[in-house]
Length: 365
Image 1 (cartoon, rainbow, N blue to C red):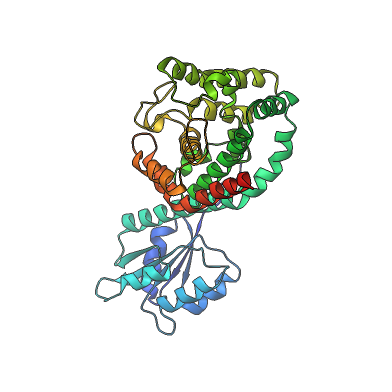
Image 2 (cartoon, rainbow, N blue to C red):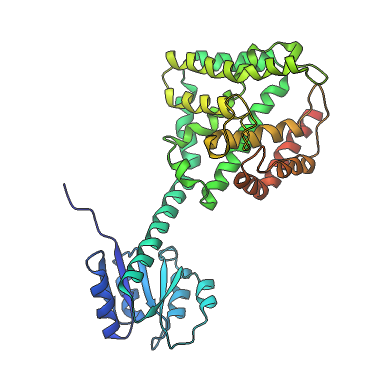
């Protein structure tokens, strides 16, 4: 088995003593290029792609700040993390460097332990950002690639969803479509902001996640019209019956999984069907899960499902305006909904409102 490839650090400092000291500190852990000038840096960048650059600020010719302007203006180098190096005696505008895109500052003379830990932390962050960027860039392609497989599921899945849509009124089908769009908006923003990345990276196939939400309410097939379409408030007994749609939906999905080919897709569907009525404070159903005990997919679906219910006409109510629905989501942050996801919802609230309004306009045509 070949040894794991070491990451590459470029040191740029016109002081040869500083270069030698820093290189000796790093050479046991990284491939190190010690470069005495900005000109040498750009020459090596033509053939070597470093994982991080340690860049002195006060250099003759091009200063560190000048180098940063060039790096950030070139798409080949713009994403390389740069840590500025400065002597304790130098007066440096750290804000200027951070605004230019530097990720950190370290001071000379170096502490080996601190320097190594700073580099380790920033390389870890860079790897995580690269993985999230890869997920973001590939999400649409993955969804498209997997769509054919999802459409190729045993006909029982497609038939049961079709029966669900046809058996109920047209609003049901629209609800499935809208909530999928809402969940996708939230996931894309999570990826963009690097939130809950560890939980999302545990998803084995991102392309199945959003489509699986189409089965979140499949258990309502087994609930009578008298309860589903009741124009008034449900009695306590009726509400208990309504709540059984979660367990019935999970049971139906498990039966499909016994015969189906794409068990991973159905695993996601079971999660979303079984947990989208759980609440952050533990007061939801069916299991009374609390906080992060609720899977991320269930927490996402909770926001999408409630928002759509609020902005849609129901037998017992008229649709709420988008801003009113958003206000209710905000109010229930930390009780019904994951507060972190509510903050993400705030960033895409306008897109939610657009989808809801476009759907309403189509219904009114």
